Amino acid sequence: MIKETLSDRLLKGFFILAIGLFSVYCLLPFWSVVASSFASEASILSKGYTFWPADFSLEAYKLIFKDNTIYRAYSVTTFVTLAGTVMSMILTSAMAYALSVKSVKYRNHIAFYVYFTMLFHGGLVASYLLISKYLDMKDTIWVLIIPSMLSAWNMFLLRNFFASIDDSIAESAKIDGANDVYILFRIILPISLPALATIGLFYALGYWNKWFDAVLYINDKDLYPLQYLIQRIMNNLDYINQVSADINIPNFIPPAMTVRLATTVVTIGPIVLLYPLLQKYFVKGLMVGAVKG
Amino acid sequence: MSNTAMSIPEHAYPGTKKRGILGAFFFELIKNKFLYLLALPGMIWFFIFAYLPMGGIVIAFQDFKAMKGIARSEFVGLKNFQFFFRSNDWIQIVTNTVFLNVLFIAFNTLAAVAIAVMVTELGGKWFKKITQSVMIFPHFLSWTVVAMFVMAFVSTDGGFINQILSVFGIPPVQFLSSPGYWPVILVLLKVWHGAGFGSIVYMATISGINPDIYESASIDGASRFQKIRYITLPLLKPTVILLLILAVGGIFNGDFGMIYAIIGRNPPLYPTTDVIDTYLFRAMMDLGDMSMSAAIGFMQSLVGFVLVLTVNYAAKKVAPESAIF
Image (cartoon, rainbow over all chains, first blue to last red; front, side):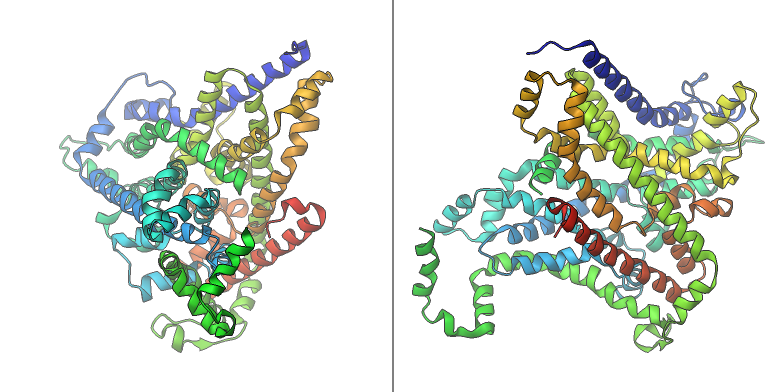
């Protein structure tokens, strides 16, 4: 090992500083919203947002958890995320596996059929008319799942991973009389867990963070997903008036600011909790996909 | 070995060659029936949700009426396109879309490459792990959540930026009605949201570089800076170009999710932030003008398609290893 010179160490010091500062920059907005959500409405109104709540208050959280809107939005989003991810993974891995087997003569034709959809699309208007008018999926929970069930990008990422698995594993199972469906579910998928975790995470996040489809297709308040609820409460006061409806204090001013912030914090909660567990999987999985791709 | 393997099917199924094109087609389908069955649901999905909407492009050439549907609406030729280009909006929204995307692509690529290079050089395991997690994290938050964060910073009363300004006695800035600041704010947000996540791909590329190259450079007395300048960055170039090609193909697609969530319906900010996608969305939802929206969307798709082909063609000439197809 060659000893580092002064300039090398200075450069490294600069890198540590730069990365440290950028990390703070990444964390700051998040921290400020969490901190402000625990402040009292009065202090936010008089002193503004804060990085450290001077007078700690759970008022906003009490209000939103008393109303059932947040629970309903949570169950919609949870259902969409779980059901959607499972369906996405089944469809994606089935297709990706078929396209990864080299003895399938038309696999490149099918791959192009999928790839073309990444290059050219029919546009928002046509999709909107198709889904709302011709498929009549408006105001159903399935409209949040089915139209986004497959992603060409994820499919190719997974296909590249499957293609990197030794052919002989599938061949020997075939000689033993297993069919391709059995091989996929019993042999290929179990040895592909890191890749599946990565793709599954991408799908799950896509479903969890979905809101634009709700803007287009959901009018029914009972079907609002969490992120759409956030978008609604940022732009109107209905929700805030609703959660503070049963408070019978004269001249009570609904805590509009902190209710918004607290709802935001409640929305990101599960991501923050699950993130450390999932992170190691997708960094690995992405690296595999990126190098092979 | 492979020759014998190839010739087995001919012996096993005599007359392969005489079967004809159609026969060979069905033979292949039957031979791999389970695999084609596995691909089938996905193919049907892509047909319904990607290919059927392509047929909907005809709306761009119609005077579409929801009552009549696509089949019976009247064809009007290029009238919808003329209508769009006659209003002066198009210059503004196309300029905004391209300008913002160029800024996004440039700054995100720079930041992502810088992060990847710097993180790879860091020694400490814990510091590396924690900072990496923190930097990737914003990517997992939806833009509606980010919009809430933005409010905490730019609000006129109580926003952090104005709190800091007031310490220095500077009067508060009305960010929500001053379009000039927003390209900067949006770029800062985009880097915040995507640079850490984008750096993963570059880190993967760097970790794939043969360590012997660095070793022999060290023996020759290369400094840390020289190793980055002459080994890491040149070897990152193909990946950077490949990702730039993909990005350039989408340069006419505004980031709807981001801009609609953050700017929303705030007309004072439209001069610098209204992009093709948000304009199209409003034309569709507020005016109900399906035909003009479809015309805009069609042009956007078409230009994007031509751009990808062109850039890829250029890449093939300049740097063949970066071309996509």
